[in-house]
Image (cartoon, rainbow, N blue to C red; front, side):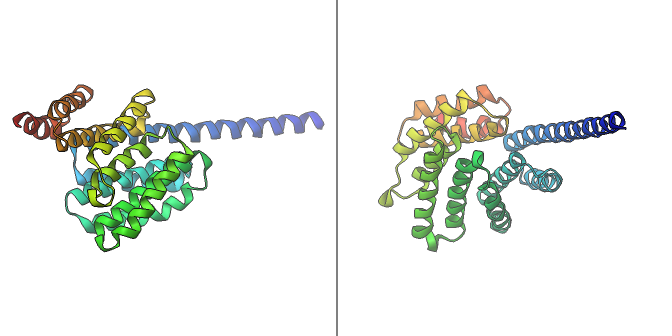
Length: 253
């Protein structure tokens, strides 16, 4: 009887392991697919595509509630919010920001994601300023504190250096903004991205390089701006915004 019970227990154990492996494998494949699609959609710059994939990622996360998937979902919302604001679609940006802020509280629970959670929190405060500038002083201070917390938790977090660059770039000089400092922080982010490129950060890497090039243009370092745009195209030749608009304009100066 004991031998029979042993084999039954072993069978249940093996079945559970197989199901767990299948669950994990299915999730990993889907997550890798999302990474590729987000990168492609960033290069193409289509708002409708971002909305579609964020909806799909939200549904997937409801079935696969893993911290890495939660981070990817919030990061995708971050990209969608930025794209929506760029296209003057503030209603879409506002709705996505509400959802992202609700989800962010869950991400803080996971120690491995604390730095990235603080980075996103800082970015979301900045987005709130764009949507409602009247609160700029209060939210700006909160954004800076969040980024400081992100770097304290992980000094090698490239997204935190990227957001610090964004803060310096978009903040008026009278209250601490500096395009030259933005260049320094964007370069720091680029270096860390390149030393350890994560599949879900590839589009952020391109975005950081674009912001770096724009910063160079603001401080009259036009040759460095052109070199940076060309670096982007070396990495991604299909990036039409850079190939057809940003680089040609930079070369005309």
